Length: 96
Image (cartoon, rainbow, N blue to C red):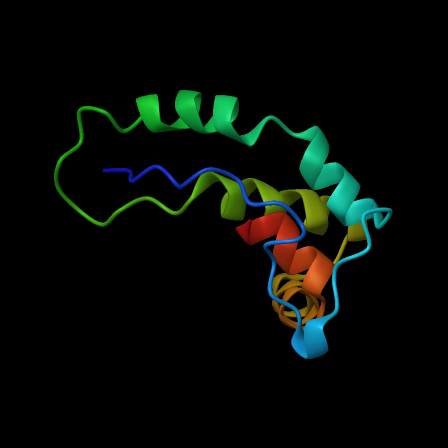
């Protein structure tokens, strides 16, 4: 089972503390904007169209974003989780 995500938000929709905004020149923000998330999610959701039981599949953007970050940084899972939780631009890549 898969529930499609809502339309991709912009970097201006991403909540930052103290009213700051993400830097549109950040490499992770740029990568995020290059990937056609809606198209890929359409293909991904087709894999689950006949499955009506069990847990809901994780969002495509979360899965793919984590793999992109981990393969580029070559870090173990535990460090990956720490870096994503501490870095807004990485959070933007995997969530928005």
